[in-house]
Amino acid sequence: MAGYLFRRILSMILVVFISAVATYALLSLAPGGPLAGLRQTQQNSRFQITEDDIARIRAPYELDLTLPIRFSRWFIGWPTGAIKIGDKEFFGNLVVGCARPVEEEFLNDDGNYEVRVTGCNETVYLKDLAGRRVSKGIMRADFGVSWRLLRDRPVTELLWSRIPKTLELIGLETLFSILIGVPIGIYSAVKQYSKFDYFFTTVAFMGSAMPTFFFGILMILAFSILPKKAGLPYLPAGLSEAARDYTIPLIGKIIAGSASDRILHFILPVSVLTLFNIAFWSRYIRSSMLEVLKQDYIRTARSKGLRERVVILKHALRNGLIPFVTIVVFTLPGLFGGAIITESIFAWPGMGRLYLLALGAYDYPVAMAIFFITAVLTVIATLIRDLLYTVVDPRIRLK
Image 1 (tube, rainbow, N blue to C red):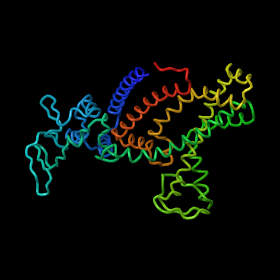
Image 2: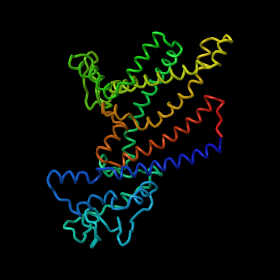
Image 3: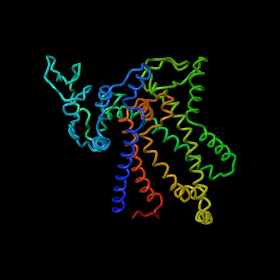
Image 4: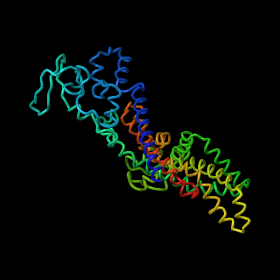
């Protein structure tokens, strides 16, 4: 077991590194980025972009550096400080807006460090560029600063503000869908071709075939918009809590931010995800159980006179859970990554919506942080899966 874990950890480190390289390279080469707003301005007003304009925009994001150096600073936080490439020094005596050597520097009356630069018509302020932009590296859980969503603030600060909401949403949804979907799948397999089986198989196919964005819009229409117009009790259609107090017919006044307010906002997004995943879990466990129930050892157990309950729960279910474990462990990355579509429909302030907003705003440090952490959780989930195999099936040995 120790040798197996050692080999797996080494392979996990390699996979995480390759994932980090691919993520950083793809997002660095993606269209858009910090210069997108400048290009949009040029298209709308026929404003000509000069080299000084480009330098002023590129400098705060370290885009003057080569891709390998930028990746190294992002990944392990090295090299730090000013960098010399040939006869040019980056982020040493350079300031935002004027990518030229400093001519004069002094402290003004306000205590700000003021710099005048050759060729610049205006006074700019040096804000410790190297210290502000160079992180300790993602290997030390420092993902740098946000470019747009939380400008010049740590990415980790933005992530920590969204993680609790995603854990609440995805955690409850996963718990409910497994507790409901697994028993339905087991009973459908045991009662194959019964009316119950036909009914829930049909419902499961419909549920899994219906896109979550369409299902979510239908739920908003049916339980929020139409009841509210008719003067009936309704459910809030978006956010995790209200900004101000509101009144629901037959229920009364709801205090914004109260427990009842949060519960009401939970119902629609949790219901959409739960109903969608119940269909998935029930179908998966049904097919797995049907495969196991055809095995010889199940017929042998029944021929010994064991009660059907014991045969199903002790012999069939345990072996039927082996492929089920493969799917369950991969809910771990989902607990962090969130549900992008559902969170967007219901404006849920979770990780999924944050990822979409980061891509839309070209805030690549935030998007890369979410990518990287999801990759790490995925490789951890694969290790947990292999370890759980030995628990579910004692015949499996890890060497």
